[in-house]
Image 1 (cartoon, rainbow, N blue to C red):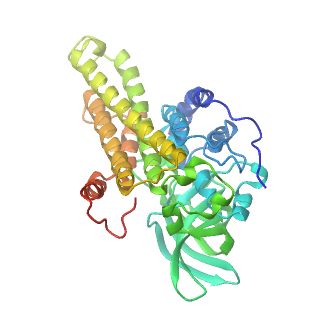
Image 2: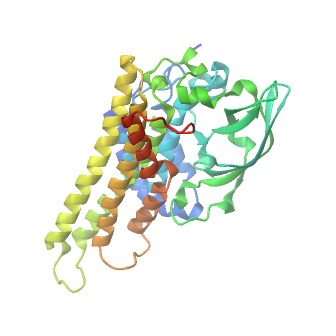
Length: 400
């Protein structure tokens, strides 16, 4: 059985407009997100009401099955209002696609009667002291997981575990766990940047997950997943890591664009000490703004180009090559470095050795925290792409 969306899919432009209309609300909510170490229920509810979590939800499960580039055009507008909300939407907005990789019965649990779902992912070696046993057709999970971005507002988490088999061997599997099973450590998220994302430590204590609510991690990496029994959209032929890398780059490019907005607002009204004239008359400030805005837009355009290219390749039926995959991996990191450097130049041009608390200070911290993600490190990614271009073997554990 497949499900129809509760309303027809809006145009991409209408979705972007709806996100833009949220900017005043998000600007007001942003400081509270930092203070509360999570995005608010009101903001999360508005994101759902606007349908943003249906953008990448499979059509067969009640979603709109749009290009992921639509999601990240939306998240850029959200980032102009609040950096933390943009991080949650850029990542969790992609994950309904991942939930659609699971067996059909599991999809029906996540998207009952075609409803939407907020799904977070706990992969990338974030488990600590995790044990997984197999009992009566269930995995029993106990342990701690870090960096659970959006756990306060999610419905489900896709958790990567080393799962035992009936033969006594072990295999890496993704399992879907409902939010209600987790204990959230609210005190754990004491950080320099990304305070408002609420990427906290979470715990499971003997949570039972049916084996049918799991899938092999190797199948996710190969894009040969059970969900394609139902879901036929192009995204199910795109490499998982390629899109995941771009979800992080999308948040970073959006937040950098938001910092440009704040810079413009400050410079328009600023009289720098010692100059006696408005900063809008300072040619060097104007040049810094022009250069930075151009580089940030260039980074976003590269993101859009890569993601739409992935979609078009998937539609064509051509297989993704190793070189395709390594290029997307390094492109994500290069996009990150490009926009981060441009944003830093803007902050430096504002002058002063310390920033007062406010949106520029928060965006500066959040950008640097987001850029520290392990997939945004250029050299490891570039080495993989260099190897691919030369036809050299990649490490066995290369994540592409």
